[in-house]
Image (tube, rainbow over all chains, first blue to last red; front, side, top):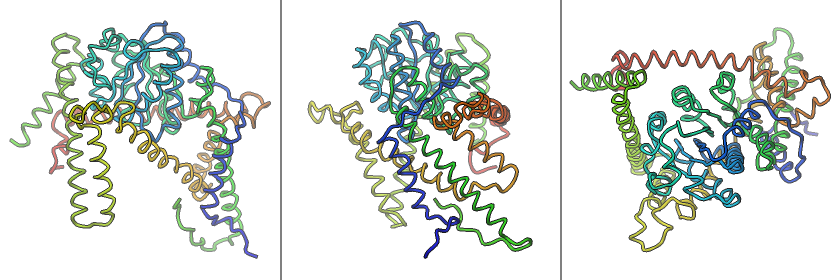
Length: 287
Length: 224
C-alpha cells in the first residue's frame, strides 16, 4: 500500500485544503467573537470627535488587488462619516482608486440621502505622489483643478469651502503601498499638522505602529481584522466581518502546516545517524 | 555643458525647496507652489513616456517573434481598447455618454470594474495558496533566530483572528493570544521599525544632500 509521505506533500493537497478553509466559513458563517484593538478604537474615537458638518478627506491610495482588505475600510469610514453628517472630499495618488471609491460611496450616499457636490466630492487621481501632497498643502483646488467627472473644482459648492489642509478636520488614508500612508505622514502630517488616520493591508501595518505611538496617526486599521473591528464599532456588519471567519480558519490551517512541517523536519533530523551526510533537499519551495 | 546645466538646475531647485520649507514668506511660498505644479506636470508627462516605452518594447517583441509575443499583442490591444473608450471624445459619437468618459456606467468603467478588478483580485488571492505551501516547506526551526521568528509568527497569526481569541478565552488577560499579539506589535515590532525608519530617514537626507550638491550623479545616466 502506498504510504503518504509527509515530507513531500503534493501542493495540490495544500491548495485544496486552503480552498475549503476559505470557502466553507463564507458559506456557513461561524460568527466568532472579536474584541476591538486600541488603534481601531482610537480611529473610531477620532472620527466621533469631529464636529458634524466638518469636512474630512478620504485619500484612497490602493488598487483592486487589495480590495478585499481595504474596500470594507472605505465603506465603513464613509458610513461612519455620513452618519455623523461629515462631508467627504476624496483624493487619490493611485490611478486605480477613484472608481473603487466611487463604487463604495454611491450606494451609501443614496442610503444616507447625500448629494454629490454638497455632501461629498470625488477629486479623482492626480499624478505626482509626494509633489501632489505638497501642492495640496498650498492649494487643493489648484492641485486638483477638476474632479473625477471633469467638473471644474471651483464650481463645486463643497470645494468653495476647501482651500488647503487647514479646512480638513481629518484625513483617512487607505493605503496599500507607495505613495501611501508613509508619504502622508512624512509630507502632510508632519508639515501641516493634519489629523491623519490610516487603513492598510495587514502585511503593511507593522511599520506604521511607531506613527500611532507618536500620535502622528490618530488611528490605524490593519488588514481585514482592523476593518472588521471598525465595522463592529460603526455597527454595520460588512464584508470584513464576514471574511474574518475564513481568515481565522486559514490562519489556523497555515499554523498547522508550519507545525506539521517542523515535526517532520525534527523527526528526520533525529533519525539521521550522527555524522551522516544531509539528505538531498527536496525541491525548493515552488508554490 | 550637458552635465553642468542639469547639475545647476538640480542644485538651484533643491536649495530653493529647502528654503521654501523653512521660510514661510508669501513670495517664497508662491514660487514654491508654482514649482510643485511644475513637478506634478513633469511626473504626469512621464506617464506618456511610460506608455511610449511599453508600445516600443512590445512592438519589438512582436516584430521579432520573441518568446511570449502573443501576450504582447494582448497587452497592446487591451491598452488601445481601454485608451479608446476612455479618451475618445464622446460628442463625436452623438449623445452617448458611454464612450469618452470614465464615469460610472461607461464602457471604460464597466471594463475596469468587471474585468480589471476581478483579474487583479484573483492574482493577489493566489498569495494565500502560495503562503500556505511555502510555510509548510520552508518555515523550519533551523536556528534559535528562526525559532524565535516562528513562535512570534504563530502568536501573531492566531492573535490577529477571532479564533485565537476564542482559543485562549478564560485565561488571564496577559496570557491571551490577542494580548500577546498586541504586545509583540507594540514593543519589539515598533522598536525595530522605529530603528529602520530613523536609519532610512538619515539615508534619504544624506542621498538628498549628495544629489543637491552634485556628488551623486547617477541619475544623469552614463556615469557612476
